[in-house]
Amino acid sequence: MLNNVSIVLGILVALQLLGGVLVFFGLAVSLGSLILLLHLLPVTFLFHPFWYLQGADQAKELVLFMKNCIAIGGILALMVVRSNQPRRGYKVVKEGNYADDE
Image 1 (cartoon, rainbow, N blue to C red):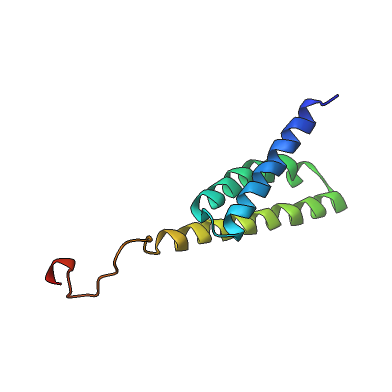
Image 2 (cartoon, rainbow, N blue to C red; image 1 turned 180 degrees about the horizontal axis):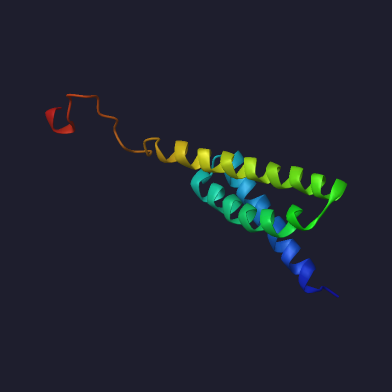
């Protein structure tokens, strides 16, 4: 019988897989990045609470927490770079030339 933890874990794995596939294959990079970001933010704070631990356990969880923070930074950078690219179907106009001049 499935308990709540198994259901939540299944949803989190599905979100991570969906976001990763969308970004990796370039299908919907912005949507995939957003899904990964919305997945990683709560997971980082809920599953790696290093501030409650001491010793070797604290060090291990701190490393995992920082790894997720780096991944969040990379996803944010990908979202910024992707948002600054011209969209498909739009004509890039050089400085001084306007689409009406053609």
